[in-house]
Amino acid sequence: MMRMDETERRFVPRGKTSQEDLAVVMKHFGLPKRFPAEVLEEARTASKEKVTLKKGEKRLDLRKKFIFTCDPESAKDYDDALSLWSDRKGNRVLGVHIADVSHYVKAGSALDREAFRRSTSTYFPGKVVPMLPEELSDGLCSLVPGEDRFAFSVFITYDKNGEPVKREFAKSIINSKVRFTYEQVMGVITRLRFEARRLKLKAGEWKTVREIHSLAQQLRAQRFAAGALDIETSENELILDGEGMMTGLVERPYDESHQMIEECMVAANEAVAKEIWTKGIRILARYHGAPDPEKLLMLREELRPLGVKCGNLENPKVFSQFMQSVKRHPAYSTIAVMVLRSMKRALYDGANMGHWGLAKKYYAHFTSPIRRYPDLTLHRQLAAYLEAKEKGSNPCAGCKIPPKTLERWAMHTSEMEERSAEAERAFTEIKKYRLLEEELASRIRVEYDGTITKCARIGCFVEIPTIGVSGLVHVSRLSSRYVRFNESDHTLSSPGGGSWKCGDALKVVVERVDFAERHIDLAPATRAGNNRKKGRRQWN
Image (tube, rainbow, N blue to C red; front, side):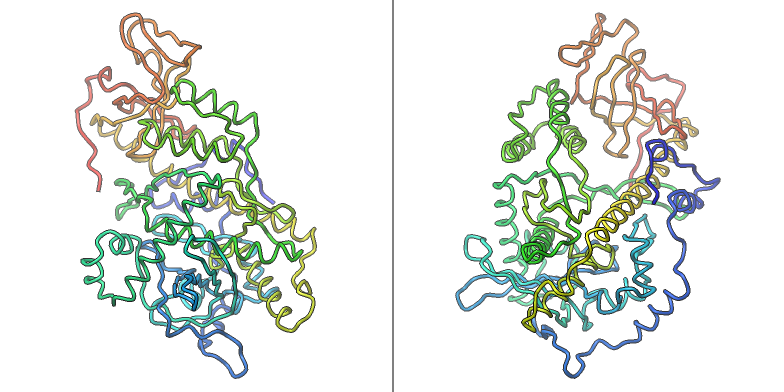
């Protein structure tokens, strides 16, 4: 199985034209262009099946319940939906309803073999390389509004303090009543009357959304109190024109609507993992180990120039409190990147359980079976477990996967996930470097607001948030006089005036772009040459 080394990660060739960039990235990372004929045939056959309860089929009928989805505007594959109601004791019953992909993708089928081979969907701007054919991913399995769909439902009952008191699981049939975008849900949360009226929501419907939001904030507070890390970073979406050239970035804020969905998915993932793992059934856990002490020492050294006190970061609760304390720090985005670099990567694991970053003892992926193979695997195990439990037989019968098989699946799915993420980053990087090359060729000097992320003997590294790139300002460009690197506090200073430290704001212009090595040379805007016209990038 392919494992990308550092050279492969850094260097990705580009196409001769902008339209070829995607094809080049896909080829370089070995992403499949099309599905095999037998896979498409199975998908077409499955898509002709009517979603209806057959005689004797045991599924919980939830079609009359108010169930809704919430996804990005551009999404087409809706994995998950939510509901909330109260039980006789007044407790809140959260329903997390996940597309029942296992009903259509049978173990050992051509569809299943191809889904395992891909293991994950890869998302590019305007293009998806899906794990499953569109007949399923965007069609029969997608929880589109107004259509009956088979689902796997997780019900978690919470008391008034937000503590789980009961968990139940059932195969179900649902009919999503509304397809929300994150922006619409945020509108219901913050501009209740206006947004509810605009979306034509009934009183009970918008109240359900608000109550789920309230529960999610309770769960979120509990996670952080338990030591979960709160690293808030906004996502930037690449905007391309008709020719495939980058025209800008749109910031997608991580707000309370995203938090609502995240907390509900985390709760469902935890509930399924705990139910199965505690019965002695090994699964593909989503394992995230504690950071290495050496990495934490390096993080402490990186934070020292910023004057940030961090305490004993080996204690999860102290680490969590530290992240809360730096949220208003002017260099928060830089600190967040430093913290992420010190963390281990979350992986799929068939032998270990627990997620350090989420402060969860039990955790696995269950909520995205349309786009992740480990989720589909867990669906099958949970279905077999519930069936055995209902029949009164050994709950582990038919649920166990041989350890060596789990180990092989864990390695493969982790590698495919990494491949997908690297391909997405490479494509985005190519578009950004094309943009900067175009800018240099135009000879229009564009000034960017940057932040110094690190100082070294050769100069300072500066991040440009508006386009999501970083580059080096060489010491020779900082001052016409000698620039000294101060080892004690990791700052730069010049006898002729001027000092530079991590976290400082610095206006810069791009001077050179090395596409092959992915390297950008920057210069302070005040010291840049005057042979280029002045201008400012106008983002869409």
